[in-house]
Each structure stands twice: as structure tokens, then as C-alpha cells.
Image (cartoon, rainbow, N blue to C red; front, side, top):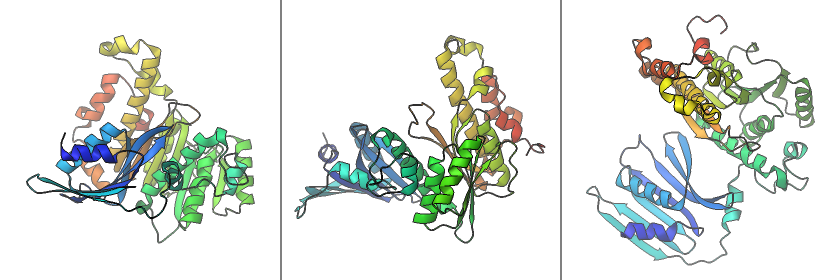
Length: 392
């Protein structure tokens, strides 16, 4: 076992405070990586937050995989590591020729260092123990600011969503009002949280519209909006496909919009030139009813596998279409909602360079078309994004 292996074996546990990996060989590939321990469903993981330009990418790893990733980073992108635990400090330097030098020193603990669970609580954007009025009304918090045990998954989901919003803050304008639309807002846990975070905590000048088909839901959300005097938040009853309430939007959010409703929301976002899209698709029935390929028949004949493959193909093709329309796209893992497997989030940030590099001179021969035809599908989003489409 190498000295670096031994160091990581000693550091990667609940006593770790943080690891910072820095001194990149190429700053365009990354600036630094911060690593900290987190508990997820009573299991220890390590969250790596990599800073690339103005963006931050979060990934969670188990101990052995985290050690492998750290060694890969020090063997490639980065040349320095600093590890801080409750009892020690360590520095790792990698020379241009790959020589690894490690220095260590004991840490004198002069105060009680808080537990991992306490650190984890402090990391939430909306903290446990700090009363947030609308979360009380929505049944997530008690009047004292404690999390209702049965709604803890919802609390974690809200905070995870706000982490995604936090990552895209550099993409939002600061010199004017930011226009945001939440399609299919439902009970609006995340709509209220997004408004509260951006307006009350971050001080952004924003106007948020929540749209949903259910009249009773809109009435209830409007009542809460009035109660908390969220003057720049409105709720409207309506259909995503037919909504024409604006010509310009900075961010479009669509969470668990069913089937092709997601496609209409994404198409609207592209039409408006939205700088940011955050979408968690749901119920991909359209391609499940179309998908077919003789080579895949031994797999597709099983309904549960066909459904999952159709869902993955649907979101993969959506991501590719967004890239071809000027977006940098990531498909990220979201937190399960009410034990549903629909937990892929599409995060798209507008970048005109992507559009220039992504389109083929012969669309009928490009990789998107080849993939689409292989599975025998005809996605709604492709039709909505066709040039000159009258519906958009």
C-alpha cells in the first residue's frame, strides 16, 4: 500500500472535516475539489464538490470509490491535496514528474468538534431548527422549526433542489428582474422554497409564476402566497402547452410534469431563450408505446425493462435535443419523491457555442437521428423544436 493509500485510509471516515484538492494543471478543466463526509440513509458517503469555472458539480461516493477518485485526480488534473481531520492535518504535493510528497502534523484540539450529524444539519440551505413559515403550513416543519419525521424525505428533497438552484446562480442576471416559470407546480413545495431562497435569502429581484391545471391547488397556493406577502410570486391555472403569458423567461422549472407535458415545457423554454432549465421528467409513456427493435426484443418483451429503457431513452434524446439548441446539458440524480424512481434531473444552461458545435450538416445522418431510428421512436420534443413549428 502506498503512502497516499495509507493517508486516505486514515482520513476517509467520520472524523474527516474536509479535503481540498487544488493546484490544477489546467484551470479550464477545474479549479478545486472540496470533499466532506455526509450521512445518507444512515450510510457514510463522501461528497465531492468540483469547482469548474462558475459552476459546482456535486457527486457522492462510498469510501473505496472516493479514494480511487482522489488518486485519479492527483494523477491527472490536480497537484495538491490538504486533508483536515479532527486530530491531524496533512498535505500532499505532486511534482511535474509525478513524485508524491506527504507531510503531516498532529492537530491540537482546543474545543469540542461537532459530530458529523451536526455538520450535516448545518450544510442544509434551509436549516433544521430554523422556522420557515410556509414549510410549517405545508406540513414539513413544526412551529418550533423541527422537521416532521414523516416529511424528512421532503425536507431533504427541497434542500437538494435548492443546491441545484445555487449552482446556477452565476447564470442569472443581477441588473434586472429575473423571470422564472414553474410548470406543473402542484402543491408548490419547491416553488415556495425557490422564491424564498432567491428573494429572501439571496436578495434577487425575481418574479415567479407557478402554473398548474388543478383549481383547488392554485387556490391553496395563492392563499399561502398572500399570507406571507410574497408579492412577486403568482399562481395561475392553465395548461403548459397553451400558456402564452410571456415572451421572455430566464429560468424554466418543470418537476414531474407527466409524459409529453415535459416536452412542451422544454420547448417553451427553448423558444423563450431561457438561460436555465431545471426539469425532472415523469411518466414517459409516449416512447414506451413506440419503442421497438428486433435486436432488443429479448429485453423489450419484459414490460418493466421496456418501461425503464423507454424512460432513459426519452430523457437522453431530450438532453441531446437541448444541446443542439444551444444548451450545456447534465443529467443528474435527484432525490426520490414519495418513493418514486423518477429521480433524474435535466439541468440545461444556455451556451450558444454548444449549438454551433452540436448540429450536423446532414441531420438525417447524425447521431441523434441514428439513435432515434434505432429505437423506432418519434419524440414530441423533436417535432416541437422543428424550425417554423406553428405551435411555438
